[in-house]
Amino acid sequence: MITEAHVRALLNREDDAVLVLLRGRAEVVPAPEVDSERCRGAMTVMSGRELRERLGSDRSAPGDLKAVAATLDAMVTEQGG
Image 1 (cartoon, rainbow, N blue to C red):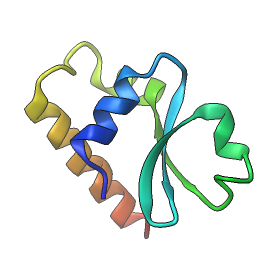
Image 2 (cartoon, rainbow, N blue to C red; image 1 turned 90 degrees about the vertical axis):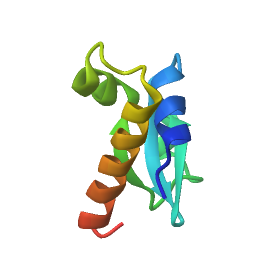
Image 3 (cartoon, rainbow, N blue to C red; image 1 turned 135 degrees about the vertical axis):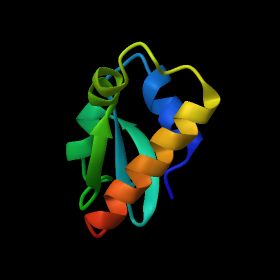
């Protein structure tokens, strides 16, 4: 569900993007859009800011991004997403 591409997109966005689960699919959306009609019912997974804080300066290796994606996916599964 959550892939390395989602994590990369979340980290590379200039705006404060948010990773959400919307209708069973992971999406990276601008933070203000989370409260929009289009995202009604979406589950917020994590913001880019939160992810950058958690990763610190160690966020460039592709294998690491894959591990982060797997961790986020497991977190969503545990929450029933």
